[in-house]
Length: 290
Ligand SMILES: [Zn+2]
Image 1 (cartoon, rainbow, N blue to C red):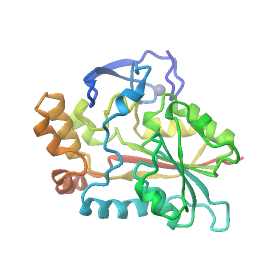
Image 2 (cartoon, rainbow, N blue to C red):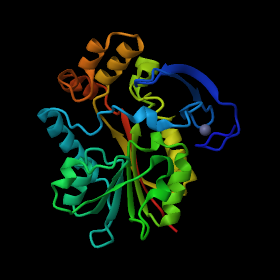
Image 3 (cartoon, rainbow, N blue to C red):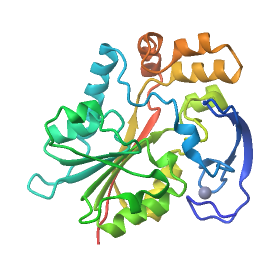
Image 4 (cartoon, rainbow, N blue to C red):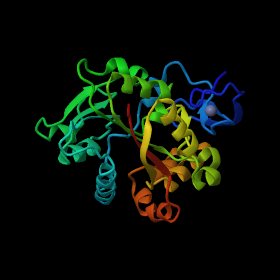
């Protein structure tokens, strides 16, 4: 079997099994490509939708958490650099609560927000129609985009690791007319991956199918025919979430596990621990040049 990320025809080596963080406590095998270094779920289930229920991705957490998050998102939005007078159409795929779309819109981008659920995020409903929301199917993103002109900029924050074939999807965007793509994914080169091993919250199987480091992420850009314009790392709360996974994988009762969930008080006050070991998210801003 060839590696879908780098194309190398090498045996994928099995690393470990980890339990899904879901009602369905199924275990999945995680494998490793020795050529590009990407790790992946070895046999992803046919129907991934079963694992997307009961997720809390649309909640924004407590006020302090929201304030810190907005500051980080604003910094992040400044990385998307296209000329002031050029076409600023953008699609924010996997928009979640809509906060990044909202910030991009305020910075002058013409934003379409897209996610898997039918209902429009509350935040976007309150913006007075500046931002269009569309429902998309992540198993077939390209065919679920609205017909007509492809937005010039594609934002994929914490999306690439969920896709069956990331390179194919990026190529599809470029072929459809996208010129810039911004990506952010959990950073599996980070020390938390070594400290926590399979309990690192980046191993959110099978919602996450791919686990990227710098080398494998650059490989994705190269194989999609994109030029890396800028790249770097960010820091988000992951220490507490990884500890939460450790408790979950060690079968602690949910009463204890739930105290460490994202957006909770312990998660918020533990953020200084993450700041001590920064860089748990990796990002790339890429462009297509003829
Ligand atoms: Zn590979």
